[in-house]
Length: 361
Image 1 (cartoon, rainbow, N blue to C red):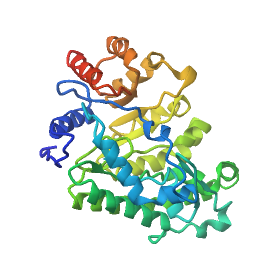
Image 2: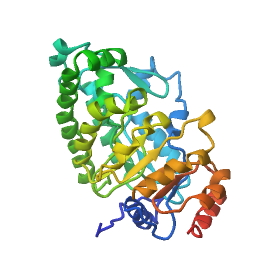
Image 3: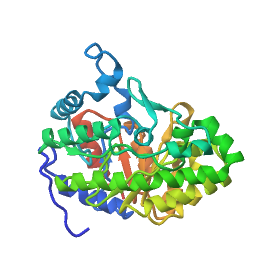
Image 4: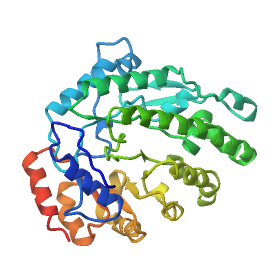
């Protein structure tokens, strides 16, 4: 990257310096220290919304002014040290792309889900991308309002998009998907191919809108790119064998990532990590987000071999860890290709962490 511009975010006077660290990280290098973000990767989903102002939860999700204003207030009272960027991403939940293809979304307090809309081959023609979908129009409204209200205050990103096998799962439902994988595998692959074309088209539309407003490419993971960025994933990988993953998920992932400059694969826990060998072989994926899980999946030190395996492949990795785990982690792992997410709200503690990372060699 030869040109780093400053989008003029008041809370990030060190924006360009931080982005240079991010770009070194994309390249599995260290500029002066490993980048660090002071929030956990699922922090947004742990915060419940207000109640009482709306007749139902959908109305709250759809209240664009409330959503953007709420985020704007949070920016005004937050610190953005290190590689912590203020990012508003228009959000209607992880299955919004399936909604744009005709599925119906149900809204809970902190997430949404979709009702399966087809059961098999004879209903494939019902899957049609709709540029006038209420979900796409609402995402556009959220985006446009954030671009207007966030000028100079925060970055506006694009929504969470899931094509491929995860989209097929949303459209069919998990039980019907597995029935069809065994009884009609050609149909499953046809469905996956059918949704890929509009996925690229809508992602191009999002990126075109953001670039027109001098925004970076960024979404829920809050790691920006001056070019194009995607967070590929296959959470259903946790439920299928390696052979099944290689047949139904990996080909589309390989194709998907060629469309973007930067790709950070979302490895959603140890059951998805069994497919890491095939994923590490994809040159267009520069980094992997390791989601260690909760309970017995903590502490982070038990996953050091997996993290080192990613590093050994010349790839970078996003790692969530607790403040008290930092010293032991630094003693065991080299900093090349590591981006840390530490949920630490205290500004003095954040600065102490940054200072400590400068000596991590």
